[in-house]
Image 1 (cartoon, rainbow, N blue to C red):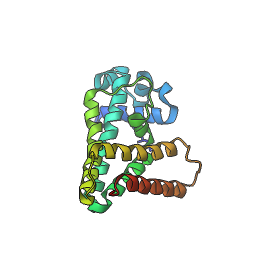
Image 2 (cartoon, rainbow, N blue to C red; image 1 turned 60 degrees about the horizontal axis):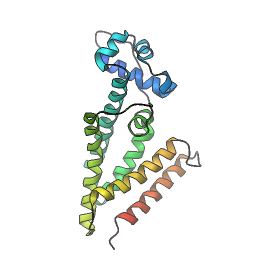
Image 3 (cartoon, rainbow, N blue to C red; image 1 turned 45 degrees about the horizontal axis):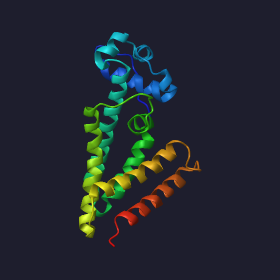
Image 4 (cartoon, one colour; image 1 turned 90 degrees about the horizontal axis):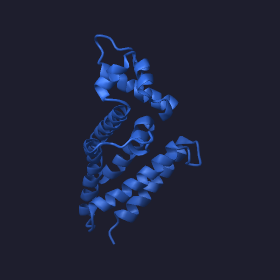
Length: 202
């Protein structure tokens, strides 16, 4: 879902309006239509406003990247806080999928190189890394509880790759079905297989 874009006025933060405009253009018209001028036009400001807040197109995309990981991370933190220890991994994976489906434009900027040529800065990757660290923590807790030896980082990376694969196929329309219930069923089966392979004691 993309946020509605309202014209900036004295009571509305121009930066948020410009960012919403960029997300809307990227979602509806694709990366080729994302220019400083098109964003400024939709946001109802001058191109100077875009440069002032973001420094240009790359800054706009990086802001979407950072904003996405901030929102994504908060969603995962909230789910983790509510989940019982033995359900935490499944809860995080489910939240991952649900957030991606609800925010496909953000997700593709974050994980799918939606804008050719964009490279996130090291500072932006700090925000991204925090979301992976949460998965590592839950994986480590699960491994310790089950008496499983090995690297929690490597195990979490393997689980994340599987989750990401299922979600990316679904977003790309390559899941070989249009039934949302079937997508969810396949995701849940895949997650159980990942957990069985990675988190079952020898």
